[in-house]
Length: 434
Picture 1 (cartoon, helix red, strand yellow):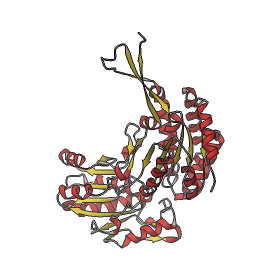
Picture 2 (cartoon, one colour; picture 1 turned 120 degrees about the horizontal axis):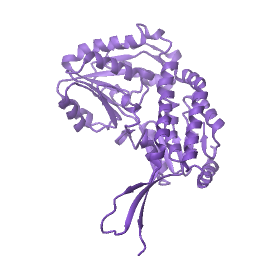
Picture 3 (tube, one colour; picture 1 turned 60 degrees about the vertical axis):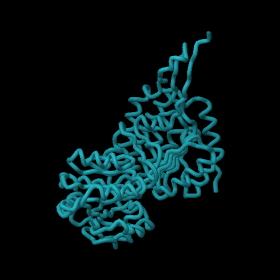
Picture 4 (tube, helix red, strand yellow; picture 1 turned 135 degrees about the vertical axis):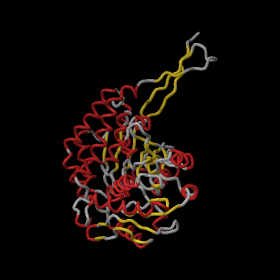
């Protein structure tokens, strides 16, 4: 197992020179990153095709465009974010003023997942750089082509003592976690998040954990059913369901269940064709282990749509499972694949009770035209973030913090919140010497 003590020391030494702190350095670095992404666009898209069979359209929209927009937003607003903020001072502290200074933590470790291997590596890196930190980036070993492109892109443009990419298996992540960093940002599963937090605790290192969980999608009887079906199909089966905020399961009110399922079937075929097994652009399941895990769920409930598989290419057709019970295996853990279980309900109260007695989900989606229904769910259920009459879109806005709660994570990022995440708020009171 390699020792990364020297890398951490080199980055800390560079950080202590103060070079990363001036606004010009941060702006130049973000511009360099932006230019590098544009330069390597074809290689990034080719790597995503090889690792996950993402089409160029899907790869660009979900992996490249989203981070370019994040860089643009950061560049437009960085000067304001960096300004010391004057705040009120209590009247009993006469002759005093109060200021909050945002300052970088120092050296950040960013551990990225495989499902959006470019976006979820670069997005937190943008926040770390904007805030004036150095960073070590560990891409996922399960998407080796994208990992290689990331390493090339960073090494061509940044010195290792500022931004470094470390490739490798789980042993590499374990070795990195033994070193002392000033901040750790992890995206991945809840079990691994617990390992990361335990390692961070040994150095009292603050962490952001972007995890997952079973994200419910509620279709109430007053929803616009056609619209709901189209938006759920798009949100669920994007990247073959390998999205942390994908609708994990459907809760549909009994009186609209049959109509919804009919519309959902049509929506899936409109997106991917009559015979999806022949669609060259439908993403694959990342590896054989995940394929086998997901295939076991196909036996649950009653098959309503899909269900075909091809182990030679880790293909699982978009699948809808009807007659699902809360106790079925598919309802135990996050699915993270193109399988969508459907549970029927009669009253909102019954599903609110079922959701709230389970771990808090990363996302929740509500399809309803009633503000009373929307408010009842929003006020009763704790979740990371979500949408009303849409899916996934909340994570594309730089104005909305993105993150989990409880077992779905802690901390958040995107837009200014990314800058804030990687910044310590240093409070200073100034008083006149009398």
